[in-house]
Structures are given as C-alpha cells and as structure tokens.
Length: 494
Image 1 (tube, rainbow, N blue to C red):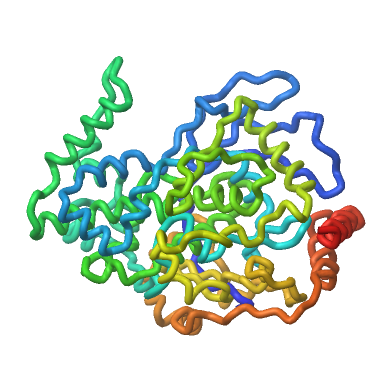
Image 2: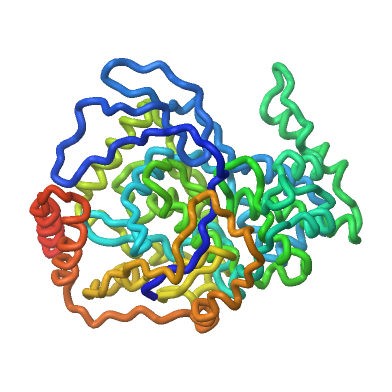
C-alpha cells in the first residue's frame, strides 16, 4: 500500500480570493506572543462576519459569527417529516443511527490544529508521541455508518444531467457538472421556501419547516416516494457524508441510488473516511475541511481527552457522537488554535487513550459487530475517484500492540495529479477497472495488522529522523528528539 490513486476534486475553479492562514508554530519554538498577520479565517465551510480586533490579536471569527453549512438541522427536520414507511426504508439501508444524531457545534480551532498536523504521504496525523489516525472502528462507533460491504465506487461521468433529471426531477448546475443546487434539492423536499419570521423562536421555525416538508412528501409507496427518497439520500450523502466546501451538492452517488434496494449494501462509512482523508491532504493554505468533520472532533475527544474540549451531553447514548458537545469559548480563533497547538505539544504519553472503546457495551451497537471484520487492517478506502490507503500498521498501539518500525509510506502516483479545480468529469472513468488492484484489496478486507515488537524505542527513533527534519528544516531536530525521549520516559514510568 505504498501508492495513492485518485483524481483531484473539490475546488470550484476560476479565481479565488487570496487567503492567509494561521502560522504553525515549529517544534522547539515557544508559545507565540506576537500577532501574525492573519486576516479572518473561514475554516470548515463556516461563514464569518469580520470582527473587530486589537493590536495584540488578529481579526478572526467569534462564536456568534460562525454558522455551520453542513445543513445538519435541515436534514434532521426533513427526516422527521418523512412518512413511517420511508423511515423504515432508511433503517433497512442502515442510515437510521446516523440520521438520528444530534447536531454537534464545530470546534473550529481543534479541527484546524489537527489539519496542520496531517501527513499527506502517510495519511496520518503526527504528534510528539507518534502517529495517530481515525480508523474504520472509529467511524462506525462514532457515526453508526456501515464500514463493511461493497466499496462506494463505480463510473464517474462527464455529465450527470440525464440521471439527475430522470431520478430526481431536477437540473444540474451546468451541462458538464457533478453538482446540483442545494436550494433546488431542498425545495423539492419542501423546505427551501421556509423563512424565519420576526420574533419567531427556533422551535416554531423548525416546526413550520417540518409541516411544509410533510405536505410535500408522497404519503404512499410508489414512484413519487422513490423520487423523494433519492432526493433525500442525495442531500444526506452529498452534504453530510461526502460534503464539499461549496453550497452545491455532489451527485456522483446518484447511479448507486437508482436501485434503492441495494443502497444498504455499500460501505458509506468507509467512503466518508476516504473523503475526509482527501480533504485533510489539501494545501495548507486551505484552512477548511470538507466532509463530515465532526468525526475528527469526537475522535479527538476520545483519544486526546486532555485537550479538555469536550462536555458530556448524553451519557451511554450511541452512536458515540451523541454523547458529547463542544463547549464554545469566548477567546478568538487565533488564541484557541495557539492553545490547542501548545497542548498537543505537551500532552503526557500516559494521557493518550490508544484504546478508548474497551468496555463499551457493543450489544447496543449492532453496526459495530457488522464492521468488526474490517477493524485493525491495512486497507484501501474507496470513494469513487478518491482511493486512499488506511495505514493501520502505523497505529498498532490502537490494537494494544507495541509499535514496530515500519517503512513509512511515500506517494507514488501512476499519473500526475491535476489541480484542485479538476472534478474528474473530463472523461467517463470506470473506477472498478482503473483501480482494480486496490478494489481487490478492499474485497479481501485488506491485511491484518500484527506486531512482534516488545517496545517502541526503535519506532520513536525512526519517527524522529523522519519528522524532526521535515518539521524543522533549520536543523533543530534535537527539539523533537527531546520530546520523544521524554515521551519514552513517561511511558516507562507508567
């Protein structure tokens, strides 16, 4: 699993405003005291209104000026409006637990700090104590989405106009596009025209939205009900699971929705992880993370509780995302990101929870048992024209094993990667043929991760050689080696 097969995706093309990003503090460098030149940062599909700052603090979004564009609340209202027979169909598909999740306020600073520690070659995060990465077990436990079954792949087309018109009764954004307007999709489900009235509370507003959606939905099974379900699934998949940074909704999944009886056979949770990895690997100039970023947030809550970013919401609830909420802060985004960076550099080894799910009552999570054959394995993840590796062998400690020295992966593409504005629609491509080797790996369930190491010291030395130079090109490798030595001592003292 040394290469990476994918076509670029995600940019809107055309001109963009130049954005500066928050400067990352280098290893060995003390906490920042001078304010870097940073304009308002718009991470993770958040909209901001410029906030006034002062000479010691750069402008940045504050909590009241962030508005999530995941569309989570709208999708939940539509779900609650569906007739009972449609809800049963979604349960059969396996989307029920995911659609019942409560909205999670985005922890922008945490997600941005994690993105800056992403290694796009190894597809893992790098920390002073070694590699970490969300796995398929994390996905299924946190979201409830299926990670077993058929890979989410197939043929991508130069135009989706015909299937969108035939299956959804809508128009695509352009003749050569894989996008459909979100407002048109929501309008077809009865919610786009709902406007909040002056003095109206949130409950009354959402209630009116639910009533409008109910009036639009087909009440009996048939072609109209199938069309409603495809529209809803397109919104869920294109806006939440495989969401993009822009407002339009991707419809590459539509060919897989033609036969509604087979939708539940696909590993949508694995596709979510592949899409998220792809987004994390974008340029450091892009502070946003497309896709279902709440997965990263809750993953960090479980594995790095010392960050102190989580607050209990519903103890014992499943999927696990239900259990937590983010306690918003009054401090600016810049100060929060700096604080998270400082904390990540000083978390003791003993405070990292490598196996946080020990003792979980899996009887209340049947989706976990279904995905278990895919846990703890090196495997290729598929999401149409995005095919990325999950190098679980780099995080063997999540399996209760010592971390052995392994050859760190490097990128080896079979072709030059196009720019980010390329959406993979220049030609029709059958990915079941183009990445046959990687698809065969998925169907074989990858390769089980094992380790006969009796300690982690050799791994730490190799890790320091790789990232000490890479993170600090000015030769201050000793700073990282010192942190790693301290980490080893902390581990031995446990």
